Image (cartoon, rainbow, N blue to C red; front, side):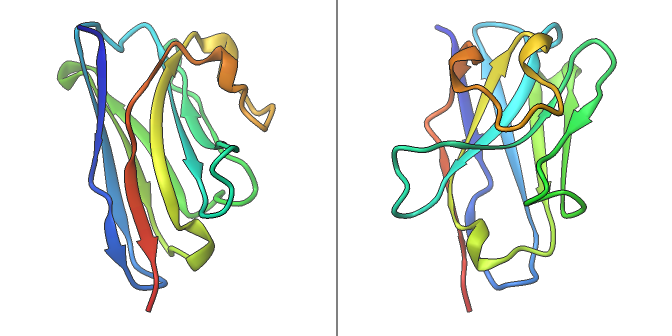
Length: 130
């Protein structure tokens, strides 16, 4: 069965760091872009794209809200994507989801398009609070 599973969320203080993982099973990620979205508390109907990485040249893209703080990466041998989050702020709090798409839907054109994503994980909760 096609599946994406996020892990690595938790409670951190402002200024702290977390590394999220997105493990794929039932299919391979090596020819797909990997994207990360988040849903903030009170905005459950809106998923904000926070990063994506292409498969062809591994180009990475970020919106201004996380640029310079988040780093997306991938390990095709492990069929896994990652999101390193540094200098976390309370406004980064939310449920983080990973998704897969064709490279066409991974670019610097934010917001990322939800309908372009092929598959979704169930999310992992990140809480940034003192």
